[in-house]
Amino acid sequence: MRADQHRLRTLTEAEPIPAGVVGRLADSAIDRYEQLTRAGRPAGEALWPPVEDRVAANRAARTVAVEFETTAVSRDWSVPGARVQRLAADAIGLYVEGYAYDHDREQARSAAVAECLEGEAARAEIPPPERHAEALAEPAPPDVAGFAKLVARAEQGRGGGER
Image (cartoon, rainbow, N blue to C red; front, side, top):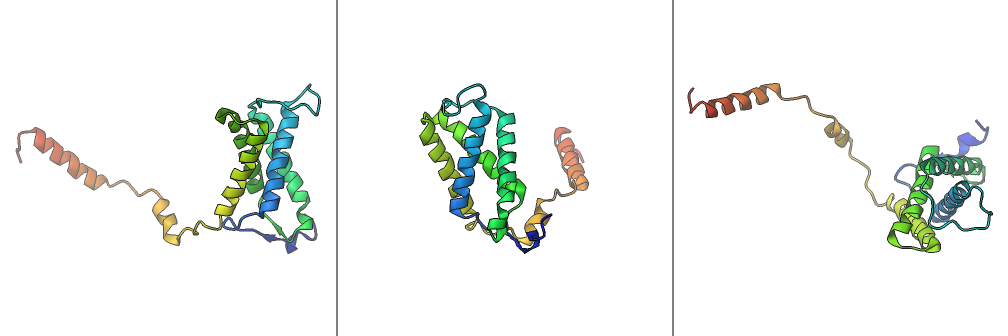
């Protein structure tokens, strides 16, 4: 851990990463992915349609997240590495998906970056979950007694109404 890391403010899930940073991060993730999937081809050669490679996508996203963390010193804020990695992976996935929508390489890149920008900006618009929502999310214990009553009623109905 760096000595200056304690001074960095960590953005909450509701705080978007600044747009300029998101754009650079998404572009960097796509560039890194292209480098990893272009093995054996000249560096300047554009690979289109893109190769769908999960291993390369995960590796590129991890690399971009590490690079992002090393530049945290230049900012007064940071975000968890997992969030950066998800954003990078999303950018790569959206880029590859662009081929399915008949985008050319640059259209796919632009659409992927724009989608990442919109997603990050939307963080500020989503209200934080209420405290009781967590309790509602937990599965309720099964209502065994209620279920037994339903079964009994169903059996009585099949038996011609006997009680």
